[in-house]
Picture 1 (tube, each protein chain N blue to C red):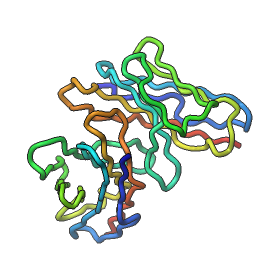
Picture 2 (cartoon, rainbow over the protein chains, first blue to last red; picture 1 turned 135 degrees about the vertical axis):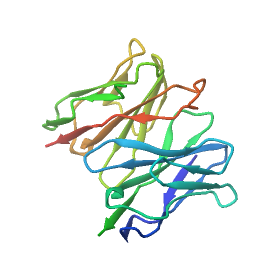
Picture 3 (cartoon, rainbow over the protein chains, first blue to last red; picture 1 turned 60 degrees about the vertical axis):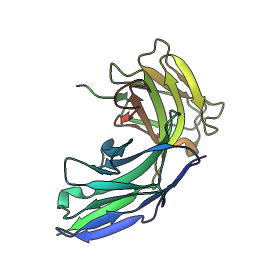
Picture 4 (cartoon, chains in turn purple, red; picture 1 turned 60 degrees about the horizontal axis):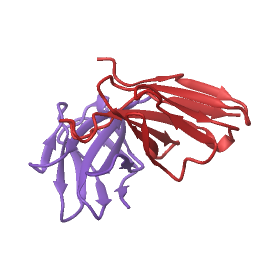
Length: 113
Length: 117
């Protein structure tokens, strides 16, 4: 069985400040890791993913996440946030041999001016 | 690029009624997934198909729930005798499958919001 824990349910931050959204997972097998973003009244959008290779992965809008196997973590970071980054962020894990993904309960990022 | 589409986007029904939702995946994707999302929680897996074969069902999927993908393209999710606890956002996703270059990354539709009165 797999599980995902997003350690912070809400993260308020001022515009242009750095942010880290924390994600820990548990699994007895190899996994792929994902971050999805959900803007108000919209569907889930893939933000970035770790499949293999370099443990640091980046998105086109400045987010990055680092896979840490020893700590079973996949924290999401951005050095300087914008108002438009306000959204719900979901961490997900998927067994490399299975179909379904297991999601965390989400972190609400609120960027204040 | 049409993405994953779902219909309807919103459904309000009375307790005890049956409802059916439709999902159209990205055209070249052979895997299709259904998830349920309630307020304050992440999506919970319900079931998924590889082409027309239903490969896995969650224990969350009670006997009142049934999903089909008859020709390996679109899928339907039916809920019979709806209950207030069925109120949620029902999400559909699709992926290329394990042989695809994207390594089975799931892409989500906008969801169908069900309200059971």
